[in-house]
Image (cartoon, rainbow, N blue to C red; front, top):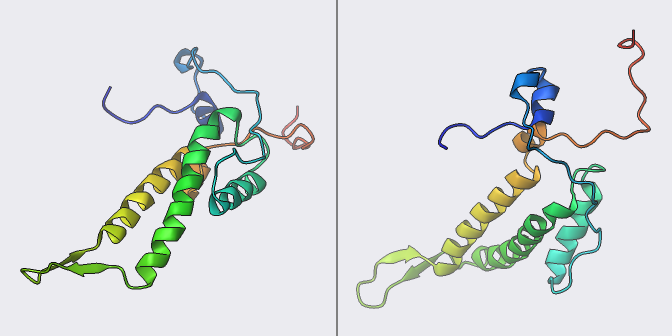
Length: 151
């Protein structure tokens, strides 16, 4: 269906617009936590990205279902670092032999594509400021309620 993406019930409740007649009865929650150890086969940069993401994410923010998207983001992050080093070393343009025309190098074009993939993953995971404002982590049970709101 075309149009705006649907909002979750948690997002509607946070904004105060949740109505019982508009609740998603098919929405489900995930109880399984994400394993803090990176999956095997990741490069050193990708492992570092995994550890950093798991470390700085709020408690309950990343779940087991986020494993695939997070792994994709980590692999693209490692590739981004590798490609950006090549581009910083001067691999931005190439000149064709016969015509002498200048064009972007395949390395620079690949860097742009990796950045787009990373941004898509970051939006899904809530890593950008805008997506973070739309996604709420599950509250800790140890947090105290505001005493002024209790009746």
